[in-house]
Every structure is written in structure tokens, then in C-alpha cells.
Length: 234
Image (tube, rainbow, N blue to C red; front, side, top):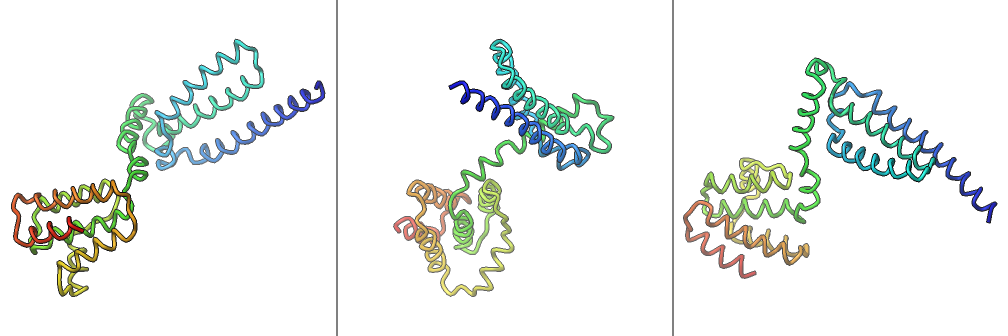
């Protein structure tokens, strides 16, 4: 087994050499562009801080165990994270160095806070969200009156789901289609949505949205009553 252990040790040192090359190549790309604002803002100050803290805990453990290979590997990660963190502050972005290091850190964290839930929104975006927006818009226009509260409600969901939405554009599209029967058109859109097999839970949420849209302008027209019974019964 001695030869096998020596072989593994050799592979570990080869792996460490590869880690050095990897860290250099990644850091080199970022360092070359450290003066670009978009590169600075693409680094997560909070995420890198957590990474450094986590690695420091492991580094202390490795030092106590005298695990040289792990000490080197973890130190490389810490060094790279610290470089990325410094770049993330925008310290080298033109016109920002005079602001001071801690002010730059606060500014970077404010930007990151605004963007923190972006990925979550993308992950939890409903299936066929674009069709849902179309359904809500057509529902709002069923009585040919587009109340400001209805508009704000649709804009809220469009923004949450990161979908471009313009009431004027949607209305132009409706006119271009020369809709003969707006009730049938709305029903067909809902059937198109249901034909895509959305999750049952999402369909239930859409029903709630339809009810919320109908009540948004605090009045229920005869058209909305008809649509409510028709759509919710599908």
C-alpha cells in the first residue's frame, strides 16, 4: 500500500499545481478588467466575505492538523477571494478611488442588496408567465376601460417576472388582430395556457389573480361578471 499512498500524494501535489494555474488564469481575467464598472459590480462583496470567513475557519483547522496540502489549497482560495473582493468595491473604477475604501464597500453592498433576489425571481417565475400577462391584460380590457389600478397590478407582476409590458403595445396588438369576440378571444388564451399543462398550484394562483383583477377597480361590470363565471368554470 506504500506505493499507492505515494501515488495519491503525487496526484495531490499535481492537483495543487493545477489549482495555482486555475487561480492565476481566473484572477488574471478579472484583474485586467478591474477598472471596468460592470466587472466590479459583477463581484458579490457579501458572497466573497462569507467565502473568506468560511475558508479561514477551515484554514485554522488545517493548521492545527498540520495538513500542508489543504493549507496551501485553502490559502489560494482566500487570496483569490480577497482580490475579487477588492475589485468588487470598485476601487480601480475611474473616478471612484477618491471616495474612500469603506464608502465604496457600502456603495457596492447597496447595489448588491437591490439585486439580491434577481436569481430567485428567475427561478420562481411561473411557467408561461407571458401568457398569464396577456390573459390579465385582456381581462382588464374586457369592458374596454383600462383602470389605472388594473394597469398597476399587471405592471407589478410583469416587473416581478421580468417581462416587458406596455399597455399601449398590447392594445395595438388587440386592434391589429381585429378581435370579433373579446370573450372568445380571452377564453382561447386561457385554454392555450391550460393546454401547456401548468402545475395545478399555479392554475389555482391564476384563478386568484383573475379575481383580484376583476376587483382591482372596485366595480364589477356585467362583462366582468360574465367572464368571471366563464373563466373560473373552465
